[in-house]
Image (cartoon, rainbow, N blue to C red; front, top):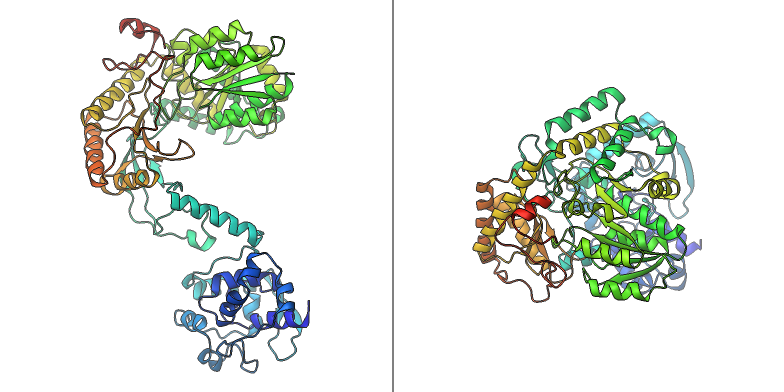
Length: 632
């Protein structure tokens, strides 16, 4: 380091305020200039003179060696003769130090003590003695107990009153990357697409009522700096949740809860390893047998989540089967897209539910090359249902595997909750079905079912299965009980669809822009990301109704929406309250009462049967016959 650069760093190390930001060295200068130039005369000059070069990423060593660097006379670093902790230093301090010290008690410790209890330093502390013009470096060893006392003292006396950003260098993040991240997050916020996590506590026995906790910060605690996470909560408020994926409230079912408790008392709370290394508990063995029975398949395999089940299975098949072509519906879930990309297989995207386009693609693939058609039964953002029978017809005609994601259907459709394929009597024609334990079954995890060879193949080759810890025994026990309970719960499924039907009718009566779907999912269109977020905030803060805004990239731009998911326990009064609140918000924000022109409703079209306004959604094939409906 040159003498000029060393001199500047020495001066910076004398600043009483900057001492609180952590260790100061040459690499920290750009960060200090960007964050404290509004109050520090030296940093202000530095930033204004060298902003362009700092932006270009030039090192401070280069900049300082090629330009003269001067410390302004009104900076408290200017006069070397004044002891840093003296009253004279405080009287001559810059605006930053004066403002800071007006809020904190004076420090009487020596400069070495200040360095020793800086929260970013280790027990072995390097400090710089403040004597001019030559600075000597000494090494001080501080006991752990003394250091902890000093850190605590500093936090109590000073840091709690400061709002100092932690240095990205201390977190191991280069400044250029940190700036890029902040820029991207700021863009999300400007566009209205920034996602905030609401602090919700579900209350057993009160579903769909939950407690909403409030914090002193309007944004999520995710990504906050450590000292910003000490947020003061006011008393929680009760809210009605309308966007939960625990569709049938099985997460609070007494039998499911008791199974989980019994498993914990019997086996503890962890699996203890991967499935191959002591993680295949008896609870998982029983669960996989039950899943096979649920879908009338030979075998099943449990994963840590539905996402992992899709990604691991599709990536393994595409990677291991030579010349496999994967034909994917354009609206498939992100987990399926990730699996297809990671497989490195030849991929083809077919227009959503467009059987003619699917056939065109199949015809172009050489007959001797393998094919797999990947699609979903219920699409979660539009609530439409795929033409499973017709897709299976094409698969058999062109000798293709079928991969069906039933995560938004299992538990709610079919004579024993096996999904849309079961309801439509198509399960035996599907090669592989994937599902989740985390939605209608109310627990956690994902799975696939198929014949024993496919399952053994994925078990043996899928990295997402092999190299991860198995589901805990208590979770497997709870999922097993939930599946067995829903095997015989057609009344519960029908009650859900009845409440769905009531909400659809009332939304339609209120002239709100709902999408009348073929399933239990009700999209309510807004078409603007910022207004969608604002409407959600008003619902939550003024009406105590929680509906999460659905924005890009989850849905296309200009099709932003609410996604309403009524359960059997959303009673008629709750439905009235929701619709009344929505009407008031639509007037208050002057929202569009019409469905956006850019939106293409997949619930209607040449390849689906269309919606039926006269009956709730049928649960079983017998219900469809009762309503005299086509199998869609």
